[in-house]
Image (cartoon, rainbow, N blue to C red; front, side, top):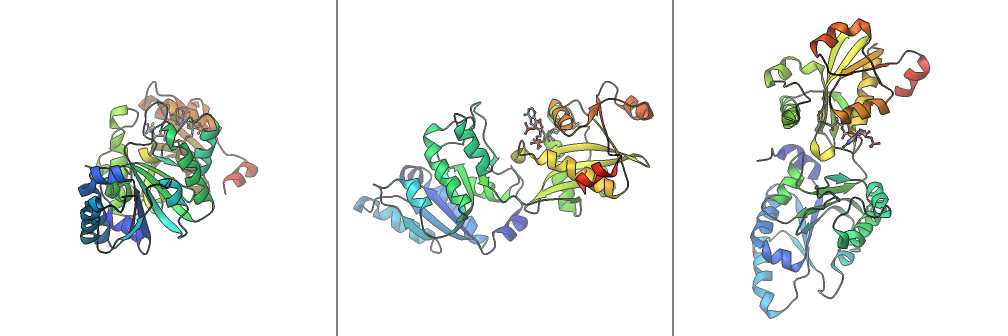
Amino acid sequence: MPQLYLDEYARHLAGRRVCIACREGILRDHFGEIVADIKFLMRMNVATSLFHNLPNRFANQKLLTELEKKLPATNFVRVAPELDFYEAVLSHPDSIDKLIFLERRYLMDRQGKKINALTTGRVLESLAHFGDLIGNVNFKDAMKRICAKIEAGTCDRVHILPAGKDTIKHELFTVEGSGTMIANNFIEEFRQVHTDEEVAIVFRILTSYKRAGFLKPRSKEYLNRNREHFFITAIDGIVVGCVEQKVIDAQTVELGALAISTRFLKQRVGVYTVNAFIRTMLALGYRRFISLTGNPRLQTLFKQLDFVEESPSEYSRRQSESPGVPMFYKAVEDTDETSRYI
Ligand SMILES: CC(C)(COP(=O)(O)OP(=O)(O)OC[C@H]1O[C@@H](n2cnc3c(N)ncnc32)[C@H](O)[C@@H]1OP(=O)(O)O)[C@@H](O)C(=O)NCCC(=O)NCCS
């Protein structure tokens, strides 16, 4: 069961309208689940609209009446069935904060993996490169329109989710979400852990990678005791990544426990977190950075950021605590380089 962060995300949704767009067949097949999710949004005081293309036939009257009865506060927008549904929804004149397309499947990449979050730049780039990211070929045109709408500034975020039990709730109120989010306005910040809730999220992120075996386990007690040494990257105010500050000597600090929540992997949040950590530590007077990792992804990331794989003799004690794990090292000595970070 994913962890819900109701208060945190509700704050972001306050005063905004969530529009849900769902084609006829999907609405029929998942009627109860969709109604339950929209009712949940209503209970969270979120304004909702439902775009659908149910034909206005006699046979549908019961369903239409039931919708209106069950969702009295929802604004219904019926798209004529002969129109292209996506075009009609995306060309709706109202400016929309959040638009959710309910589909039959996840948006997947070529390897069949769910795509978690994307910027319009990444979507368009991958469409141009033979659709690397977009496995659902018939969705390509809709994706182009979605990007155009976000880039024109008439919609903040578009989500593409498989219809099903709690998928809207999980998309909007959990860190990992349940589908794909497309947006250009992720606001990142880097700072020390503040609250118990943030300690709990850091614990969840670190534990989610337990099986991969690259991270040394950290108990909740350890995190609590050392919370002033844990730094987080937050997007929209919610923790999505963390790093531990381990002081080695007066000028050296180690980056430990670097981990990014699965939703935001491969979005350069790792690069942001490492650079922000270096910037913060430079301001505190540290000049040398080490990190020990067997994770090939992190090794590539460090090399990209001009860390070198070496184990300087002054850190032999630290190295001996993790025998066989490669050490990465970077020194920011001169003012020119320091000013790149500050
Ligand atoms: C390692 C980790 C922090 C990287 O975070 P991330 O936000 O996905 O990384 P970024 O998007 O900033 O990636 C930057 C670079 O890392 C490398 N990288 C990221 N994902 C990669 C992948 N799947 N395969 C190979 N390289 C990868 C690439 O060089 C990438 O640069 P590019 O975007 O130009 O290709 C993340 O994968 C993670 O949390 N892993 C689990 C925890 C862990 O094992 N931590 C190490 C503890 S020792």
